[in-house]
Image (cartoon, rainbow over the protein chains, first blue to last red):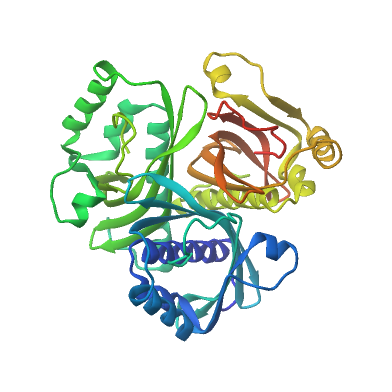
Length: 163
Length: 163
Length: 163
């Protein structure tokens, strides 16, 4: 992406990132997981870390995918292999800060996922912070990196769907 | 509304929808329910469905209002007839996706309502998804349709105020 | 700030306020409290009220700081004097309404703070409403007033970090 030069251009970048995040949330919450890898560049890195590891400088992630192939694999595993209770997810984000670093966009945002199980009650499933690198390819914004650090250390069940 | 042609125009539509949703949330949370029908077109349709019905293709809503007259009626009932414990509502939304369909704006967003009762504790009251149709009248955006599907099947008490 | 005259200008004001709120949330959630006073004008007023007092017209706040000196003092107290359990905060806001009043910007928004303690579970810590006055100084938006009214009357522990 060519560097924005005016306040309006910068505001447009923020709006495009907001739109990317929202469509990403929609795809997951609407259980359209097959389109989830399409939000990433081919050579992306997507990982999830517990906060206690991240703060202690321990590199061990809960999950780490390199490339969209691994993301597609994960969706397949979810569809065919995982066994879990039926549930509905709702993603919410706030505190989105967008900064430009040359042609790359660096963003940080808070997220919370609310889950409803079949008993019909809704609970906070997980909250945390996402640090993303976003690039433009063929006029479209994509995540080239998505680093999720979660606060909720007691993950209540198998982490079956993406954050 | 004439169709936006530039990226800036499209971004402005998104911002106007965001502003509409926020003012709508404000009116409800500030207990300014008398202004709630003013967010809709005269011939609007506003309905609330439980997810289990929606997914099973069952058309039965929890509530369905056709036209602002029915919305005003509902506010009157709330003010004069309903008996319920004092409470405060806070609406939050995220994952807003705005798409254009000719002169109509189609939007989807997640919502969560947090409720505080007189005991002073705050709980997730209801979460779900809103699919809205928005049109422009006299330079102002209005909901011509608002279809709410809620995940939280155990509605904790009488659904007394609007979502 | 000179008064915006076009729809695009007004949209930009909304986006700048959104950016201010998000960077403010980031500073607190990232525990960068030393930069917290920098979001305010020197002669700011920052206060927190319980809803029951606010609705009864009682002026007594839970906390009131006049000027950034008092804000810095509070951060110092937090760092050196307060004793509290380790925790992580996540701020979320929604329902942001931005209105212009001459050169000042008046905003209202809902907030919820989710807290995770060391046991690893995440809870709603506090929800409420913030009424802010925002001004432009040297090309930057700052809070000249931030009035927080919280619904969650049972504040679960010492209110140690800012809202």
